[in-house]
Image (cartoon, rainbow, N blue to C red):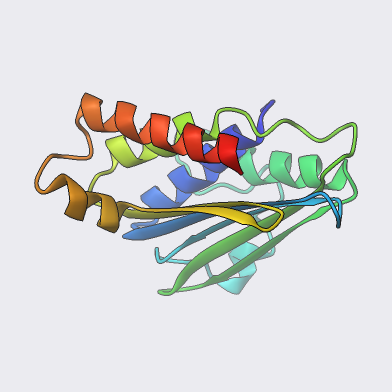
Length: 178
């Protein structure tokens, strides 16, 4: 994966497969501390401790269609290559939280990529899931909660192309202003 937004997409897909009803995506860009942090949390099935200990092994996967799972190992490598690290906390029946920390200015840090496109695609494809997304750059912050968006839309589905276009424009505009 060449962009961090694609890592986020991969991890959120795992959350969806795990039956999550609420998925949180958080990004914090801190140039003063020279860190970029990505948090993805869910209320899905969670994993037993022995599985959490093995998830960074590419030959550990719950998929039956192939014998490798590269998402978390690749993100771990992306973190480590910039002096950062990857932490995973999970409890059965309670959900999972993935925290990736990368060196913000490190030459090997992957670009964030099309985060607005990824967030909107996830929301439009999974309108039954509550997504919360926040993006912080220094002291400035943008927050999005699909429950609040649904209230404003008053019955217009999140999967509507017009809603997707509006959300993408809103996210990009707010990120430009951060």
